[in-house]
Length: 160
Image 1: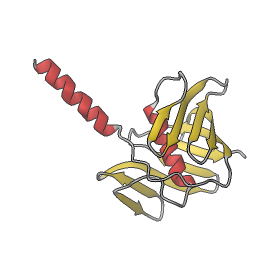
Image 2: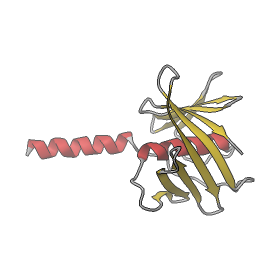
Image 3: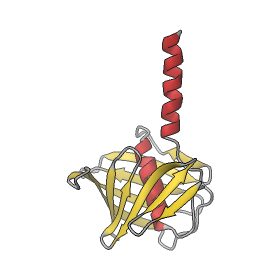
Image 4: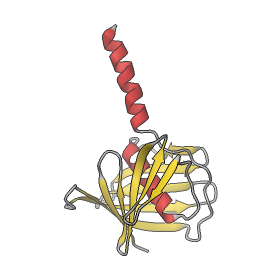
């Protein structure tokens, strides 16, 4: 009995850690097709992985497809006013949804998601949901740097 209770509590804990902010609105985009180079880096800034991300922003849905250098999909999801939906048969990728949410936030001046708090510092902008930091964004000349709660670090550079 204790084992099942612990498993249930652990499951609730994981759900709380991985929750994404609620979508407020999907603003119209001037560029409907965008392409990005995505670099995952370690704490010291050393490159761990490079991938390609395409964004197709239609009025009712934004389709995100991330693939490795050989073209194999890493993540395929659609963002609508109702939130994230899987697209196709690629395994669900919660980290990718968080990353794409942070990228969407960085690309738009209009607030897409419901944040409980936004903290702007000279170095970065921190975003919070229910008093928990969901990501940190640093805007650079070469693109944007994003830190997620799982301590993963990303550099995003637009290609087109």
